[in-house]
Length: 357
Ligand code: CUA
Image (cartoon, rainbow, N blue to C red; front, side):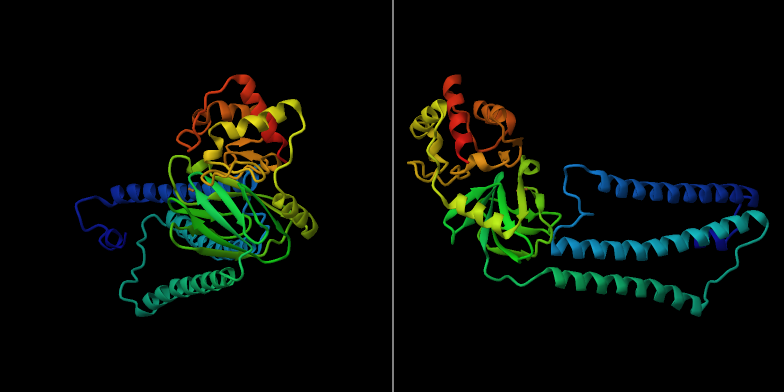
């Protein structure tokens, strides 16, 4: 830019040509600036409207709240910068058009201006850095007495409550307004624990324990997801993070610690007799039965959960039947094999599993 403006009129190109192309590039600049502005507005609107998905503009936890505050601070500062540049640009464009023959004044070698426009961005960047580092330090609460462990698997979440004596999968309750401290592990590849409305994400590495700690501030059902690409079904590795009252949390933990209920319906009873005789127990455990597998999700209270296969499907009898009939069709390359059974037996298994509240 500077080279072309300082050497105007020196080359063979006529002034008129330069002016034409100059005003063309200005128009392009204005059009680009408008486009960027429109895209930014679209992103903000889209983020606000995304129904059913994690909404980072509505934080429910201490970390997410601080991240939102930081985001708004940065957007405000950068908004002022952007606005200033746009206003200056508009002034230059309007003034330059009124005086088509005039040349831009030359500022090369002006030490004062050089220092000024090095100092201003440096100050802006320093302020952004201080705000970011301060927020990061506030979010990273020191690890202390984990209540439970979350273990990443391809492609589901295990939640292990050693003190209460139970394991569950893909759905976990925590009490509101109390710091929650979670140990994070992985059994296979690197996953990343992320409940966007609670706070930042933390990697789950095989052979190493990480920790995350934050305070859930608002009751609600929050979607958690894996934030590290971990294979073909990375996008279907989600869980439900339910923030509830201390009383409801205690009731949930108490129920989860109980062994599996005895089935009552005719089909459910038949399903309960059938399930230990087929392959399911190789991978799944149901406490209170002979099934002790540890490779797949613990099914002791499967019926109490809202989702199937890490929220690939909602937990309804129809969806469960579809999942049992052909897991590879529902979630290709998941570790759940297809076990060929007559329809009646599949329906008995569904009846039994749905009774495991
Ligand atoms: Cu697990 Cu991505």
